[in-house]
Image (cartoon, rainbow, N blue to C red; front, top):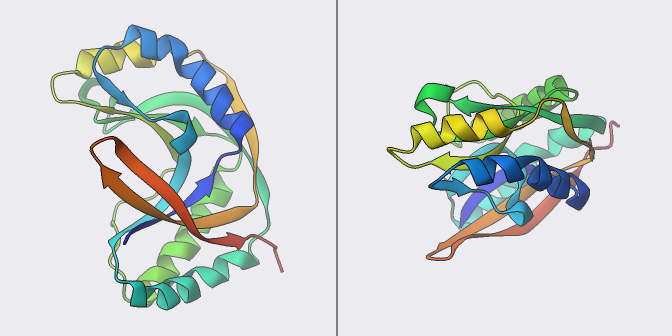
Length: 185
Protein backbone atom coordinates (compact mmCIF):
# COMPACT_ATOMS: atom_id res chain seq x y z
CA UNK A 1 0.00 0.00 0.00
CA UNK A 2 1.20 3.48 -0.88
CA UNK A 3 0.42 5.58 2.23
CA UNK A 4 0.54 9.19 3.37
CA UNK A 5 -0.82 11.31 6.23
CA UNK A 6 -2.83 14.41 5.46
CA UNK A 7 -5.14 17.04 6.83
CA UNK A 8 -8.33 17.06 4.76
CA UNK A 9 -9.85 20.23 3.37
CA UNK A 10 -13.60 20.73 3.69
CA UNK A 11 -15.49 20.98 0.40
CA UNK A 12 -16.06 24.73 0.80
CA UNK A 13 -12.29 25.34 1.08
CA UNK A 14 -11.66 23.17 -1.99
CA UNK A 15 -14.30 25.11 -3.93
CA UNK A 16 -12.82 28.47 -2.89
CA UNK A 17 -9.30 27.32 -3.80
CA UNK A 18 -10.52 26.15 -7.22
CA UNK A 19 -12.18 29.54 -7.84
CA UNK A 20 -9.07 31.43 -6.71
CA UNK A 21 -6.92 29.30 -9.05
CA UNK A 22 -9.16 29.69 -12.11
CA UNK A 23 -7.21 32.72 -13.46
CA UNK A 24 -3.93 30.86 -12.91
CA UNK A 25 -5.22 27.83 -14.80
CA UNK A 26 -6.29 30.07 -17.68
CA UNK A 27 -2.92 31.88 -17.74
CA UNK A 28 -0.77 28.74 -17.63
CA UNK A 29 -0.16 26.18 -20.32
CA UNK A 30 0.99 22.68 -19.56
CA UNK A 31 0.86 22.50 -15.77
CA UNK A 32 -0.51 19.42 -14.02
CA UNK A 33 -3.20 20.86 -11.74
CA UNK A 34 -4.41 19.10 -8.60
CA UNK A 35 -8.04 18.04 -8.96
CA UNK A 36 -10.17 19.92 -6.41
CA UNK A 37 -11.54 16.67 -4.97
CA UNK A 38 -7.97 15.55 -4.19
CA UNK A 39 -6.83 18.74 -2.44
CA UNK A 40 -5.34 18.05 1.00
CA UNK A 41 -2.40 19.13 3.15
CA UNK A 42 0.23 16.37 3.12
CA UNK A 43 2.04 15.99 6.45
CA UNK A 44 4.07 12.81 5.85
CA UNK A 45 4.56 10.47 2.90
CA UNK A 46 5.31 6.86 3.86
CA UNK A 47 5.45 5.34 0.37
CA UNK A 48 4.88 1.62 -0.11
CA UNK A 49 4.15 -0.18 3.15
CA UNK A 50 3.05 -3.77 3.83
CA UNK A 51 -0.31 -4.33 5.58
CA UNK A 52 1.49 -5.60 8.68
CA UNK A 53 2.98 -2.10 9.19
CA UNK A 54 -0.43 -0.56 9.86
CA UNK A 55 -0.49 -1.22 13.61
CA UNK A 56 2.93 0.48 14.04
CA UNK A 57 1.70 3.41 11.91
CA UNK A 58 -1.47 3.76 13.99
CA UNK A 59 0.52 3.71 17.24
CA UNK A 60 3.00 6.29 15.90
CA UNK A 61 0.18 8.70 14.98
CA UNK A 62 -1.79 8.29 18.22
CA UNK A 63 0.08 11.08 20.14
CA UNK A 64 -1.26 13.58 17.57
CA UNK A 65 -4.75 13.12 19.01
CA UNK A 66 -3.56 15.01 22.11
CA UNK A 67 -3.33 18.24 20.11
CA UNK A 68 -6.21 20.72 20.05
CA UNK A 69 -8.25 21.40 16.89
CA UNK A 70 -7.53 24.77 15.27
CA UNK A 71 -8.42 27.12 12.43
CA UNK A 72 -6.25 27.56 9.35
CA UNK A 73 -6.23 29.99 6.44
CA UNK A 74 -5.14 29.48 2.84
CA UNK A 75 -3.54 32.65 1.52
CA UNK A 76 -0.88 33.59 -1.00
CA UNK A 77 0.78 31.54 -3.72
CA UNK A 78 4.34 30.38 -4.22
CA UNK A 79 6.55 27.71 -5.71
CA UNK A 80 9.10 25.12 -4.67
CA UNK A 81 12.04 25.45 -4.94
CA UNK A 82 11.38 29.02 -6.17
CA UNK A 83 9.17 30.85 -8.71
CA UNK A 84 11.85 30.91 -11.46
CA UNK A 85 12.61 27.17 -11.25
CA UNK A 86 9.20 25.96 -10.09
CA UNK A 87 8.54 22.26 -9.73
CA UNK A 88 5.46 22.68 -7.53
CA UNK A 89 2.97 25.55 -7.16
CA UNK A 90 1.23 26.00 -3.83
CA UNK A 91 -1.17 28.07 -1.79
CA UNK A 92 0.25 29.03 1.59
CA UNK A 93 -1.06 28.67 5.11
CA UNK A 94 -1.11 31.82 7.20
CA UNK A 95 -3.24 31.29 10.30
CA UNK A 96 -2.68 27.77 11.65
CA UNK A 97 0.82 27.39 10.19
CA UNK A 98 2.48 26.95 13.61
CA UNK A 99 -0.14 24.39 14.64
CA UNK A 100 0.37 22.45 11.39
CA UNK A 101 4.14 22.44 11.96
CA UNK A 102 3.57 21.13 15.50
CA UNK A 103 1.21 18.43 14.18
CA UNK A 104 3.68 17.36 11.47
CA UNK A 105 6.59 17.41 13.93
CA UNK A 106 4.75 15.21 16.43
CA UNK A 107 3.59 12.85 13.66
CA UNK A 108 6.99 12.52 11.98
CA UNK A 109 8.76 12.08 15.32
CA UNK A 110 6.46 9.18 16.16
CA UNK A 111 6.87 7.63 12.72
CA UNK A 112 10.68 7.89 12.84
CA UNK A 113 10.75 6.42 16.36
CA UNK A 114 8.68 3.50 14.99
CA UNK A 115 11.33 2.90 12.33
CA UNK A 116 9.83 4.60 9.27
CA UNK A 117 12.08 6.56 6.92
CA UNK A 118 10.70 9.98 6.01
CA UNK A 119 11.79 12.99 4.01
CA UNK A 120 14.38 15.05 5.89
CA UNK A 121 13.47 18.51 4.57
CA UNK A 122 11.80 20.89 6.99
CA UNK A 123 8.00 20.89 6.84
CA UNK A 124 6.46 24.03 5.29
CA UNK A 125 2.65 24.07 5.53
CA UNK A 126 1.15 24.43 2.04
CA UNK A 127 -1.48 23.12 -0.33
CA UNK A 128 0.06 21.73 -3.52
CA UNK A 129 -2.07 22.99 -6.43
CA UNK A 130 0.05 22.13 -9.49
CA UNK A 131 3.12 20.27 -10.63
CA UNK A 132 5.32 21.91 -13.25
CA UNK A 133 6.54 19.85 -16.18
CA UNK A 134 10.09 20.42 -17.40
CA UNK A 135 10.18 23.35 -19.81
CA UNK A 136 6.99 24.93 -18.42
CA UNK A 137 8.62 27.22 -15.87
CA UNK A 138 7.39 30.38 -17.66
CA UNK A 139 3.85 29.03 -17.52
CA UNK A 140 4.33 28.55 -13.79
CA UNK A 141 5.50 32.15 -13.36
CA UNK A 142 2.45 33.38 -15.31
CA UNK A 143 0.18 31.23 -13.17
CA UNK A 144 1.66 32.61 -9.93
CA UNK A 145 1.19 36.20 -11.10
CA UNK A 146 -2.47 35.41 -11.80
CA UNK A 147 -3.35 34.34 -8.25
CA UNK A 148 -4.91 37.24 -6.41
CA UNK A 149 -3.69 38.41 -3.00
CA UNK A 150 -5.57 37.86 0.21
CA UNK A 151 -7.34 35.06 1.98
CA UNK A 152 -8.54 32.19 -0.21
CA UNK A 153 -10.29 30.07 2.42
CA UNK A 154 -10.56 29.58 6.15
CA UNK A 155 -11.12 26.06 7.48
CA UNK A 156 -11.20 23.97 10.64
CA UNK A 157 -8.48 21.38 11.28
CA UNK A 158 -9.96 18.73 13.52
CA UNK A 159 -8.42 15.48 12.31
CA UNK A 160 -5.48 13.81 10.68
CA UNK A 161 -6.02 11.11 8.03
CA UNK A 162 -3.95 8.11 6.98
CA UNK A 163 -4.62 7.77 3.26
CA UNK A 164 -3.94 5.09 0.67
CA UNK A 165 -2.99 6.28 -2.81
CA UNK A 166 -3.48 4.06 -5.85
CA UNK A 167 -1.80 5.21 -9.03
CA UNK A 168 -3.33 4.59 -12.46
CA UNK A 169 -3.06 6.07 -15.96
CA UNK A 170 -6.05 8.30 -15.04
CA UNK A 171 -4.19 9.68 -12.00
CA UNK A 172 -4.08 8.90 -8.31
CA UNK A 173 -7.10 7.73 -6.36
CA UNK A 174 -7.07 8.41 -2.61
CA UNK A 175 -8.90 6.39 0.00
CA UNK A 176 -9.10 7.00 3.74
CA UNK A 177 -7.54 4.21 5.82
CA UNK A 178 -8.02 5.69 9.29
CA UNK A 179 -8.86 9.02 10.93
CA UNK A 180 -7.17 10.43 14.03
CA UNK A 181 -9.36 13.14 15.62
CA UNK A 182 -7.64 16.02 17.40
CA UNK A 183 -9.11 16.30 20.85
CA UNK A 184 -6.60 18.20 22.93
CA UNK A 185 -6.98 15.83 25.82
